[in-house]
Image (tube, rainbow, N blue to C red; front, side, top):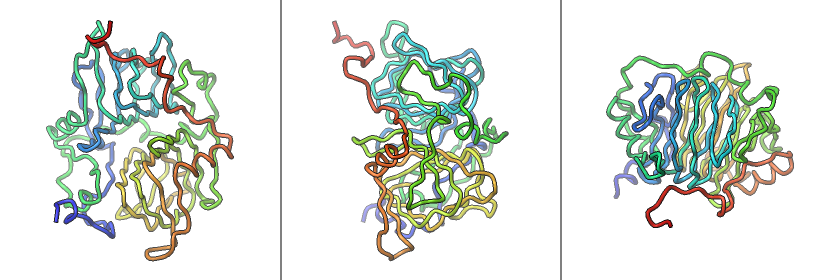
Length: 357
């Protein structure tokens, strides 16, 4: 029997490391080959190459010219940035959500004031020199090594790893996120701020302009549907959780960042988890109950990497299946405009190559 099978926890009992990480307790680590850009390391997959971070860019500094080899999605949590690509610039304010397609060459992501951004990179990032050649490639392996060097244990990527004993916690001083110091539901659940929805790139959308959609099968949960990939089945959402979610199993993995309120979660404390708590639910994970624990709206981001199956409890028949197909129908019925998944091939901006004329 393989190590993974031997470590598999079919009931997903809360006996190990689980899938949650309080990002407020993590240090900011400098990203190599950048100036004034740091990160909180959350997850790095040694299988797929995907990694999840919270980035901080200091005022007046920028993430350098880069090619995002596997694409990237982001949510601006605080501050204000200028995103430059293809000779155009989009102003990104708090509540801006975006998906930058694979192989996009980004001129810079510059902070007009200190900014924090939730980022999911679906593969490595090539950092370029001024002549367009590759200076460095930043990968999940780099994230993994940098986290280990300072004693940060990131979120596991499989059920087997979640069931293993929890390592010692990071011993350094906490560095709370900006959203942990205020009511961050205004990021996605308020009035649009001026011309924030007028972007120069189709990659971005003001999350506040996206309508809340109610699935009749889940009346206590509101959804802002941001992106749906028919190719991979990935769905990106903002969720407003009022009641108790019915029992369900994650056929595909999912990740979440709590923006406001408190989430009651398997094996969690009675008071729940608040803003800045990041979760990863590996494929096969099961929830008997997930709920809001305060009168304040529980709002969180969600990337869902495969279908969800709903039932009435362990051993009961399947009552509903939610895949990308159902989310597309919900978006169309609710009038949500989805962020595109790619650009036309003739618009792609690739890194310099000696094979190009």
